[in-house]
Every structure is written in structure tokens, then in C-alpha cells.
Amino acid sequence: MDFVFLSNVAIAAKHAIAAYGLERVAIVDFDVHHGNGTEDCLWDEPRALMVSIFQHPFFPYSGDVPMADNMHNIAMPRATKSAEFREVVTQQWLPLLNEYQPQLILISAGFDAHLEDEMGSMGLVEADYAWVTQQLMKVAARYSEQRIVSMLEGGYDLSALARSVTEHVRVLVDD
Image 1 (tube, rainbow, N blue to C red):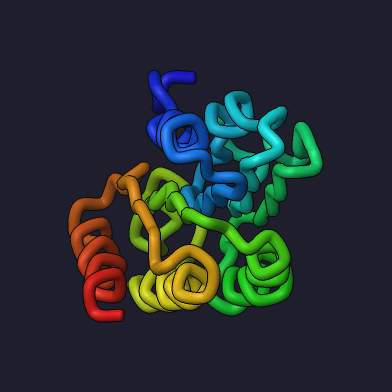
Image 2: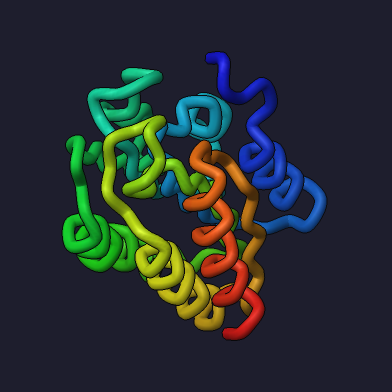
């Protein structure tokens, strides 16, 4: 739907399942847009779990009603800030991920929910991206031998994107 022609994360999940026999692949999506392509590709794949946040209502105007039980989309209102985001991660994502015990975590790393990114109207900052990455690293250490693949999905304010990606990668490398 204009932003993505191929769902790299969905392709990676299907490849990990087919080529390596993984039974539990988790997709974590923190892009400002709902990952409708990922959901379309994986809603009927029982070996995949998707947890996501996105601004709603906002393009592509989907996701508020997940397509299947393995899709856990959290529609967030405009102006969502750090506290609300971290509460969703702590109260909803982490319990689901810990119950699921993923053998691989794939991150749809969209940094367009940043406060300075005019594409959307959310209010995350670099510290939020570092924090969520730390939380995912803990899950990966527990269940997947630290296997995480992060794919850049969005970010339109170049300064905010650069700072956010730097923090995200710093955590991936340092932890």
C-alpha cells in the first residue's frame, strides 16, 4: 500500500521457518504505521507471532482488529508518549514474548513514531528505542541464543532517524 512492496520481515520469518525449521519466530513492530503487509503474510502462520504498536487512526487505517490470534496489534492514539509506549511493552508485549519463547526475534524497526518525525503524530524519543531494544535483547538472551534481526522500516526526519538508529544499534552491539 505505497510504503512497502515486499515485506522483508515476513519473508525473513518464512525463510527462518522453512530453511532452519524454527517453530517460534516473533516479529516486533514499532513503526508509526500498522504492519499490514506483515500481518497479511503471517496471520495464518502458527509458527509466527507478531506484536506491534502503531498510530491509529492513521495510514493504512488497519490493524485495530487483528486478523488472527497470533497478531497482537496495539493501536495507539496520536501524541502517545514514552510512558504509554513503555506500559504497552511491559504489560502486553513482554508477557506475550515470554510465553511464546521465540527462537528468533525479527524487529520491524520504524523510527517514524519519533516526536520530531512529522510523518506521524506520536512522541517517542531515542531513549524509548534504546529501552525497547534492551527489553528485546533480554527476551532474546533467554530464549533465542540472542538471535535478533533488525530491519529498518521507517523514519523520515533524518536527524531523529540518525539519533534513534544510533541508540538502537548501540544497544544491539553493546548488550
